[in-house]
Length: 72
Image (cartoon, rainbow, N blue to C red):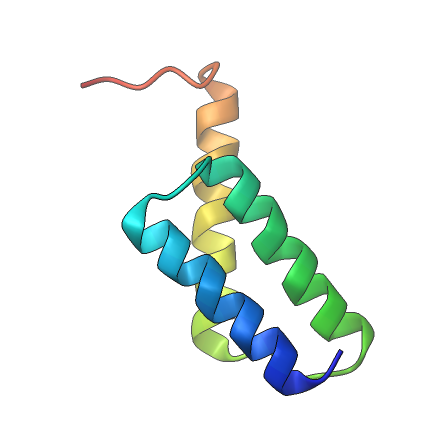
């Protein structure tokens, strides 16, 4: 895939996250797959996406630790 194709996929995923369209866990998995694909091809990952990925990982790890329960 070209960098532009990855960029378009990432833009779509981020738009879906902002609009909460679909399952957040599915979107996160697609985001990770896209970033992993970029890494595998040796393409640069923007720092803001690296931080965002780490924040989401921490969020899902915390949710998994408490059984996915949310207080509201």
